[in-house]
Length: 423
Image (cartoon, rainbow, N blue to C red; front, side, top):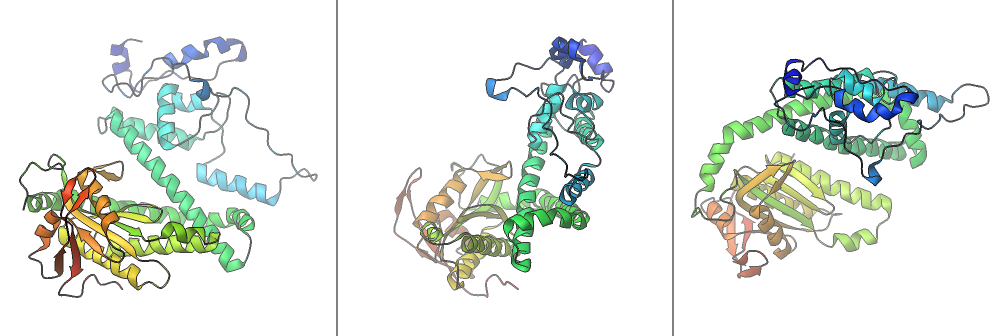
């Protein structure tokens, strides 16, 4: 199939159905004609070329799927098994009837291209004979492909967005399941294992409202992102020029943000003395308190890593208010230890849901220098806040910081006003 034909017949992929056993030798060549690319001009992702040989640890099994567990003596499946199968059919949109080559061909893709998208979503490898897909899987694959074919996304963007969806929903589902299991253990006094079994029968009543809230939250978050992008980005960059010479390490980066870290004191030693339940409660209390304060302050919680939280805000003042509120909240908390907090105003790069750049690194270094229950900023951030009566700035002795040389930390304290107000 030449490039011209690929372009002309972009939506007319030849079906790539499983071969009969005696024709198995031709299965490798089948990928060549399995389907077209996203488009002839689209690049390497959806490539009609045959799949490359897999590495030894990537060889896919040819054995048939594991047999179903033996049915109970009565000849019928147990209630738990029936409930699990009914839940799967509802979540997947039907019974598994399709093999991977059938799904790829139905979407007009080579198997190699389909596998790239499935891997981006976080799906495991499957063999040619595994009946693992439904028509909804084929429709989802076609949705991504059509965005590229219609010129709305490049292949690189399609893969990146697909990976974001896979990673975020994977973490979300694990979080939700653990929250539901923990609630059942506490409310009904059952063991963890019993709660996990019961959850299968409870989930059908939760699917629709959870799905509705997911879509609602995504739209609200997307709108907030658009507002940050279109309405406030330029103002933030203009304000970030104040007090700068233009040759700073972060000067080439596009976004101006206040970047903050909050780090619990003595978390490691505390966690060693706690049982599973107490440690889980401490971690949840820490994350919930951080999320609430950062949200109320108009910031965004970028991520939590154990005993540390990374957050951003769009102005130096907002970042300062959030930082002071976090420090005060942990100092006043009867269960959580105090926190070291630091915040730096500068430019960052935002990618893959995370942030990067010297500003982030400096904020992390300052956090390690802060005393428990205090907030540190650098001298440039202090200059951006010095005219604001809500803050008091107390210079500290210069410190030699790895990667930055000599810096001049400034302790941030509350000034006039009530600070960030939480309900």
